[in-house]
Each structure stands twice: as structure tokens, then as C-alpha cells.
Length: 457
Image (cartoon, rainbow, N blue to C red; front, side):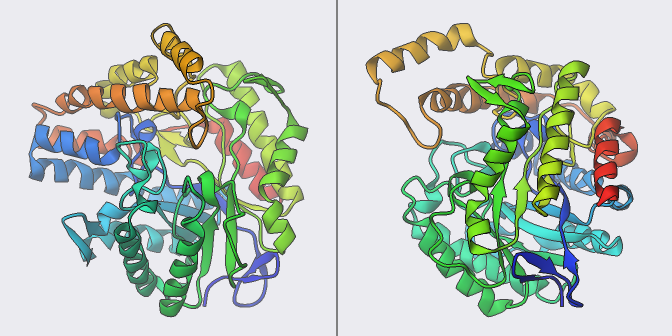
């Protein structure tokens, strides 16, 4: 047996309360542009690198990267901090191929099995999170979506594939005690709000038929902020909110202070958290924040404000006895507890700087890059289409997504891929090993902050 829901808490097989607190393993089995420094989406990036290196040598690099990115030392580091949970994002491409739908790729589980077992050896639970679904369940890069259309909600075939895939995942881990549960759909964004609820009904029934024991961690609609789509409170289920602070984004202002016209301080953070978790408190179900965390800038004064945002959020979660999963563990320097160094950053650092200058990924963007170019387009749309308010966040965000985070990002792919050309196998391995923990730089203030919080409670 593993964990189960008992009222507003998770409990272990002996009935003792367990509050899951840890990190997300972003950028690993679901790669993201701001985490490892590439442009556009994972599938587009892998395709471009494959053309530059050839299929076999690309596989050498990517498999070595997955091996190096998380190993025994990483699990030991997290255990030393007091972490008891890691949320593991997975791209469906590892487990199913688009040209052979409904056929599970057995080999695709090897790294997931390895890390779940590594964490278990240290007494750390895993939450398996399907972060990218066939057809894309939301409008952005982190669902491996090369467009701005979440086609998953438009095509029953994509939904059938995900139900089938989760039946296979649940069957594989049904008896694993260190799997805390399953997070079947990361940040769904069904624009109509009419498909996601019935899909959850269907998915829950299918997973429960295979594995009645593990906890389900279900995200709300509109990037895990809207829980009105749930028509019932399923048994043994945690309804997951995501709780990014406005002032903690790359475009965030001072803290306390104003960001995009809104005053943000500790009281505002708590009001926002209470609003985002109203459904959970009304239904008496556990509180768990599946993602949160500020972006760091490299400016000591600004970053100290970001650490204060994090301290305040953790204090709020402690006061409400909420569990949490900080985003994210490892990257190239924007948000991680540790970040890559060495050959990878030496080779790709200037490219990452160019990507930052152009604002070619959403998470690292201040929303001011290329302002002189985009301002006339924003003004045109405001003048000609004053009522245009596209889902999920309006005209300004939609325009930036289409121009910078899709068009410019895709235009950068050949340049990124070209940096792999001419490298030997040994040099490719060295690039991948730049993400191994011994090669990484530790963000010590963040590590100390987390360790102190986890030790205090």
C-alpha cells in the first residue's frame, strides 16, 4: 500500500498524516525551452538536432542527457534538504509514438523506472505527471505544442490515446509503494470548459479499474486555476492548484510593489492562494500546490525580493497545512535549485543570451523585448479589434505568443541545431554531462531557504 486521502489530508498505510513537499523535475522527461536553453518546443527541437547529428548520434546525446540530468547524487541532495516528494513531468512521446498510436513503448519507461526507484531508496515519493498529451492539452510550449491551438479537446482520438496510456502507466505502478499517485493532465486549458469535465469522469473510471489504490492528482482547467469543471468529488483524489506569484515572473515588479498595475504583497499572495484553493477547502479535500516559484534574475537585490516571495508563499502554505512542489529542480539558471555549467553553457551561452534578448520563450520573457517592433502591432490590434479577448489571457499575451514564442522561436531552431554540427561523440557526451550534479552550480540561498523551511516543520 501507499498513500491515500483521508478527509483533508494524505495519510500513509499506518494512518499517519503525510504532507508532500518537494520539487518538480522539469526539463527531464518533458524538456522545456527555458530549462535547457533551446528555442520552440521539444519535438521541434529534437527534430532539428536529429537532422544536424543524424538519428543515432542524436539518440546518444539525448539519452546521455536523461541519464546525467538526474542520478543518485540528485536524489541524495533532495533527501538531505528534507524533500519527501518529486513531481515527475513526462512527455507522452516517451511512451507512445504518433505513427503507432495505442502501442505503448516499453523501452520508454526505463528512465522513469530508474528515477522512481532512486527516489524511493531515499524515502521520497514520486507523483507521475503527464505534462504533454497527444494533440496538446493547452496552448503553450510546455505541452510540446508547436501552435496556439489545444487540439486535444477537439479530437476524441487524442483523448482515447491518453486513456489507454494511463491504463498502461497505472498497471505498471499499481504496486509501487513510493509512487504517491498520478497527475494525469498537467494544466489543461479547454477553451470551452465543456470537454474537460466529462473527460476527467472517463479517465478516473478507467484508471480506477486498473489501479484502485493510488491517489489521483487532478489539475483544474485553465492552467490549474478553475475547478468549476468538476462535477463530483472523486474518492482518493487531490485537486491540484498552481500558484505562481505575479511579482515572481520575469516581468514582475518590486516586492512588495506593483506588477502590471496590481499591488503584490504577502496579503495579496494569501488572498490569491485562498481564491485558488476555494474548491478544495469547500470540499474538504487536501491542499496541494503542484507548481509555484519565482524566476531569478542574477541581480542580487531583485533576487532577494524573489526569495522573500518564496518565503512568504511557504509560510502561507504552512499556515494552511498545504503540500507543495516547487518549480523547478534543475535548469540553465533561471529558476532551478541547481543549474548547468561547463561545456554546454560555454557552447550555448551566447545563443541563450540571444534568445533572452529576443524574448523567445515565455518563461524568461520580461514582455518588453522587441517592444519597438511589437508596439505598433499591439496598437493596431487594440484599434481595429478593441473587443478581441482570446483565451486564455487576452490580446497582448496572444500576440506575444504568436510572434515571439512561436514565430521567432521556430526561426531560431536552425541556429540552435547548427551548434551541434561537427562535434565528436565525446563532445556530445560532455555537453550532456554538463547537467550532471557534480558539474552544476548550486543556488545556495535557495537551497538554504528550502532546507530551513523543511526542517522547521
